[in-house]
Every structure is written in C-alpha cells, then in structure tokens.
Length: 91
Image (tube, rainbow, N blue to C red):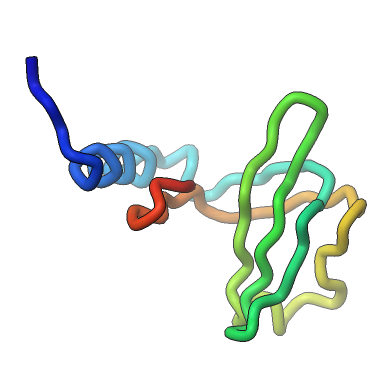
C-alpha cells in the first residue's frame, strides 16, 4: 500500500489533466451562475447544467477583450483550457 500526501495527489492529477491535448482547447456550454469579478479584475463563475457544474475563471486580460461579461442566468459557450489549481485541488 502506498499512501500519498495531498500535494502529490494534486500534482499528479494536474499533470494528467494538463497533458491531455483534448483539454487544452476546450469548448463548453452551460448556464452561468455565481458570477463575480474580484478586486484583481478576474471574473469567477460557474457553468452549470441539470446534473453537473464546472468552476471557471476568466483572467482580467481576457475579460477586458469581451463585449459582454458573463452574467448569472446567461447561457454561454466558453472556450479555454482545463487546468488544475493545485493549492486548492480544484480544476
């Protein structure tokens, strides 16, 4: 039996996800919820559907280039790369 610490698990999952070419240029459709723009200028929101949700971030550089910010209740198509935020174990 091998016991991993949390950091090793998150680092391993990060490597797996970020090595998958299909997840490097991903298009996802869903309803925007929990939309907020932080003090740093980044937009954080969730794309959801009936059975699942995906937490997202749009960094301030990208946010400055779009015409309309994602708002709660909007149905949208997002394009990005799936990444792991290792410190929190989220993707």
